Image (cartoon, rainbow, N blue to C red):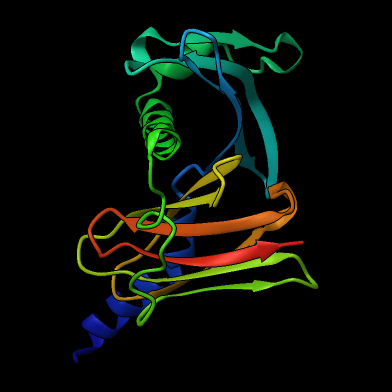
Length: 208
């Protein structure tokens, strides 16, 4: 390796924290409220954004929807309406996260057999661990070529609760994420990690 290449490599290492921090991180928390008499699924949704190391509210709403998310009825909680629903859905990144969250949650809610969805998979090269004393969930994702981000979906096995994070990752790196479980209520959960390029993996945790 030449001197210039070494300098470039060192520069890349120094820039790694900046690159990882460049992506805005969001947390979506859902509570399933059941079905209406007309069969609409109702979900209480909290949206937060990570700013200066702290999670801050963006929006709280109750969403009732059928198959088509575009036809969903959204009742916003004006006490926490930091950003209007219209503004949120005009943001391509946030709308993409919302669509992922709702599609996955509704798929689970509608499933007649959750066995496959609740089965751990591909844990050989990736890890999901829980420190019950510190109440910290640690996810390690090994990025492959082309990986830039992951979704971390944490859903209770009975579908009552669902928390989703988006995180930036680097390829060829064992990315480590410590997630506070303060948002998780007592339950058994399946944690699924989905990179934008690499293979998805999942594991189970219990909060009691």
